Length: 79
Image 1 (cartoon, helix red, strand yellow):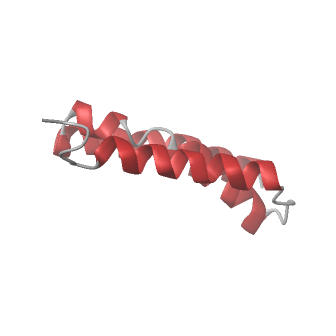
Image 2 (image 1 turned 90 degrees about the horizontal axis):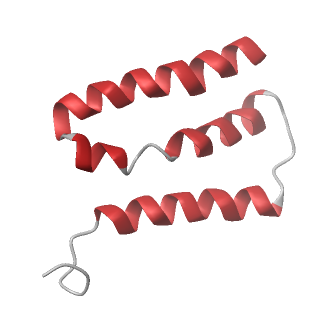
Image 3 (image 1 turned 45 degrees about the vertical axis):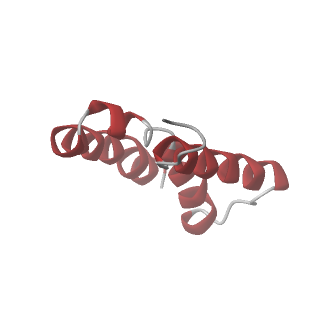
């Protein structure tokens, strides 16, 4: 199970990250690098039946909110 999580959440995520750089560019792709941490936490919960604490929930939400804010095109932030 550790080998599976190591391959799925680390190696596969960075391979897909490199593919995304070639597709959407470095600036847009770099904002998604934090999602690999959230995927690792969620994989541990669903695959290894680990506990999902409140702090992990808050951290995952902060990661997703950060990715959303970094990618939104709003007239309030960028002109």
